[in-house]
Length: 359
Ligand code: NAP
Ligand code: ZN
Ligand code: ZN
Image 1 (tube, rainbow, N blue to C red):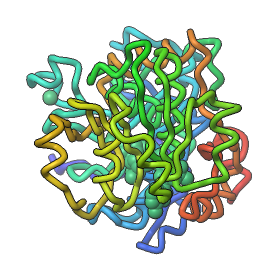
Image 2 (cartoon, rainbow, N blue to C red):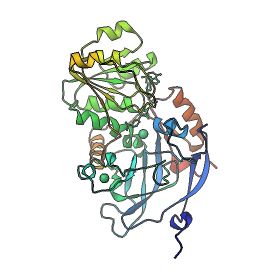
Image 3 (cartoon, helix red, strand yellow):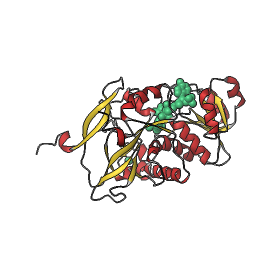
Image 4 (tube, rainbow, N blue to C red):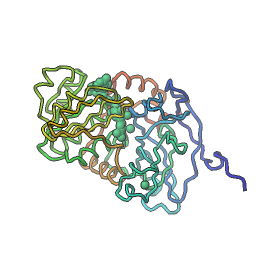
């Protein structure tokens, strides 16, 4: 029997927006997805966040993009169909899909609920092994293991929890930076950074933001309750804070100096890099040696169990991202504004109401 064509194996017609070259400009794009398999959940996408990783990838800044690319990995929607062996979901459930939609389910990482580190991990869009398309589209399909329940009291617009949320929650927990009384630094008050601030405050830690934007100071203090706000290019402010932090989450998306950040740490403090910077950073060794400081990378988001835990924690503690809801046909402007650091603090596309209107 002849092998089935891509179209035969993917009969479900989908409408989304895609970039077709390194300009990163998105435009309407018709494609298809697989039928709902026995362990699959199909959902109607209602909201999708705009992550800086979307921007890196539509412009091929990581060198791994296959065009056309449909971005979007902060997806919240409603279940429209479930496979015959699906156990956790039913039609009508509110659900979320984040950065991964598959893994081998049998390796050590998968057994330890760290699917995100599996060699066979399948990312939600622009996977390098098979074609995957993300949430800037009307319909998604994923194995139920990679779908989370969306708590009733959590607004669906809070979709950025699914990447910005888990990427900051996970390392704060894993590296023990979640103890009341600790002092945590957050570098870059953007999509990830403002979620790091919210979780750190919820854990009862003191928070210092280290930022390039003077204009974010008042809001950081008054709205997010940060305890202090340092301008990273002001040596006096940075000097005054040397040796004060137990840990730092660095969310900056471009090459930036590491030494001043290491200096802010106490002995044995941890600098955790979560920004996905495509170029190497200059690493000064002596401050690490002499201060017992740790420089670590995290976290390629987080595993599925922890993602559900984070969503539930957010619902319980009323932690939601600060979002600017935009129409689908505003997405190119939103991406331009993201490049210019002009968003407070995450764009979320109202896919449900505006995708089909935006043709
Ligand atoms: P974002 O909203 O653009 O925030 C980045 C922040 O970095 C900006 O708000 C800005 O904060 C600061 N910044 C911007 N330009 C800077 C510069 N030239 N020098 C110093 N600071 C600068 O981006 P995001 O969505 O939070 O993502 C941040 C990074 O994390 C991206 O590289 C993204 O790909 C990556 N990421 C990684 C993972 C993972 O799994 N590890 C997951 C998601 C995203 P201030 O205005 O306060 O300076
Ligand atoms: Zn992301
Ligand atoms: Zn695995």
